[in-house]
Image (cartoon, rainbow, N blue to C red; front, top):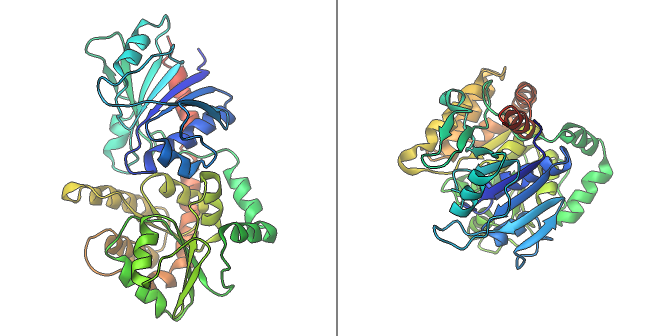
Length: 383
């Protein structure tokens, strides 16, 4: 039986990662599949950074074809449950309100209940993907749905037109000019262009110094946020949007925090992209550019296992051993393994890493798109 409507519940944990994934998924289900989507969010202020036209004071609104409602995930928080949609996504184990669970259990046709998990390249993901977990009290079953980089997982979010949109942008000088005008930046034609979206990072000052002293000029574009604050401390001057600061062979450009739809263009326009968390990490794959990932840190360095799992998979994609070694060493230094990021070694391998990124993203496309995979999975479980 077909699924035509969705409830997606999201709590905003690290400012943008969780809502970034959920907002992108909600729009894709509404716009590409024509489904009714109700997105429940607990933090509209953070959400508005990705969607500036959002009314942060409205408890109920529509945007980009998606119904958006506020909710509070605290146990016992007031919640009036509407009739559930055909499928319900509990994003990243955020725990559904009890009244909504009761409404799901009472529905004549039980919704398909999915826990959309965090992204990981670890081998165990395929083993646990689609596992069922019956509710201990109610006639409901929850399924664990894992995005991933291997067969047997849910794949990655990827809009159907992303490849064509990227190619059209790359072939259009006017599109590039529009982007830089919107960001208030003027990159130098001969410079390596780097986007920097990162958490605060102890390794960043050493990288900035290497860029300042580099033989090859570097233009770095830094959106408002934690990285811009840290860059400003290194500069000794606040890095505001629309301002540029030259230090040696480095020019640092402060840019606005762009809406989600425009972030892709920045990734396409740069030669190397520094990304963080999950949503920007996935977008960097489809940008087909060398990327530096800052994974969200966890206690006891558990995030290192996840990072190395991705590196292991990427190493099998056909990238040259020299390019992979430069990337691995840089990622390790950037993520707190010890040592200092070696920019010159990485910069020399950017062409080879770009070729490897192209082969890698073509392999990932064979896994299918996460949104379409969710629809197929749900329809196979409707009773």
